Amino acid sequence: MTNTALLIVDLQNDYFSGGKFPLVGIDAAAQNAARLLAAFRAAGRPVIHIRHEILREPAPFFAPGSAGATIHQVVAPKGDEPVITKNFPNSFRETDLQAKLQALDVSDLLIIGAMSHFCIDATTRAAADLGYRCSVAHDACATRDLEFDGVKVPAAQVHAGFMAALAMGYGAILPSDQALAGLSG
Image 1 (tube, rainbow, N blue to C red):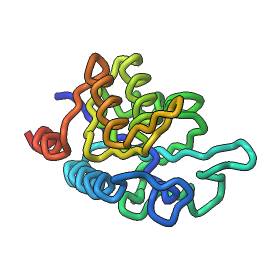
Image 2: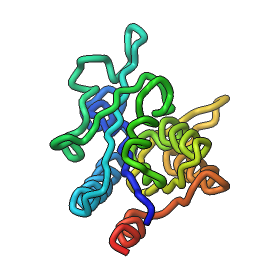
Image 3: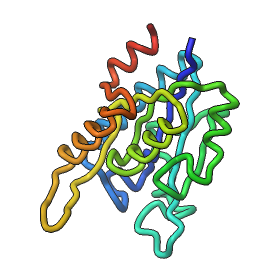
Image 4: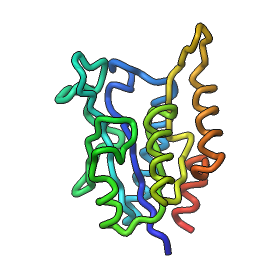
């Protein structure tokens, strides 16, 4: 049987209402993330929390030591669940994530969190390149509106575009309910 770990990427206070960089749909995504987290805990499956700190000064959000860089209470770590602090969009870059996954004999990853177009994308692509079978619970991820060359792109379209791109070869993109059903099956 494969060993699946849950990676919760960057569900930190600055992405929520009142934070420095709130995302569209973050509350709904966090509720789905909490459901997945509870199921992984109940099944005794590995859970790894990823948190981002921006080191450049001044940090626009996720400043080291700030309340905004703290993992949101809805998915707060418990017990000995590992928390990995990263400084780049790719959760594997200059962290011990790969070593932790190897020590847990993990072969499959369910990736959730924020932002869909940034750290979820970078982490999923890196994980697939490292040989992990990846799934992303798309409704447990959030992003924000973007703009390029004067064109405004609504968050829903940003999210859909990045999920579609990941589905082209980096992993399965599924709703949380399907991920939960697969966990118990």
